[in-house]
Image (cartoon, rainbow, N blue to C red; front, side, top):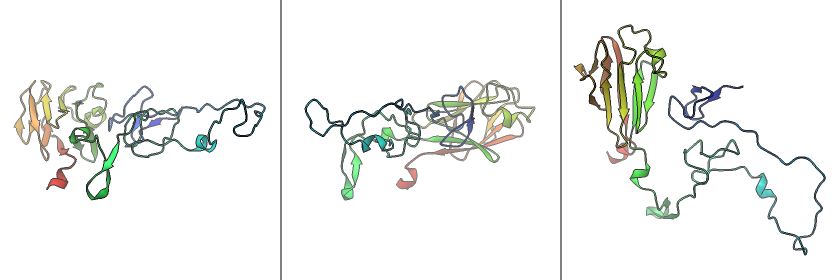
Length: 225
């Protein structure tokens, strides 16, 4: 069986994964499209003949399926979620009204529908992201599957060293999990078992020499500056 690859970030996934371990996006699995079994052609009759039903334009079935929200093609006919905008394909698109400048805008789109922030943690050239409402365990234990391989060379980092999280409102934090050698934010020790706020540009250090860089991206901030 071919290895499952995330269509958003390209990270390899395990067969039993439901979401990508890198970007937390939904994973789409290929499915075999079902086609009618071959057989004798059905008798043709004229349009509108008595006892017949007009089935519409046959070319409609040949058109590729597209997302009703963003218009992106649907690569697998059985997909339930759009691989581009991550919205349910069977969900009716919001009504559109004329906005400023005559452009069509979604009548039901509000700021609450937009992602509040994305927390990015950089380990040298490698980056991990945390989405609103999610957490990421930092350490060398197998449970920290997204960071275990990155931190295993640091013997002074505990197996369950610290947890970083991002609240739905965009508040980022780190919690030291009673590690042996401590967790530090901009050089100041974080209290074990309690959440310490994280801000864009902070430097997070585990033990003496494992340094991570923090960034918090907030969509729309650049437009308001």
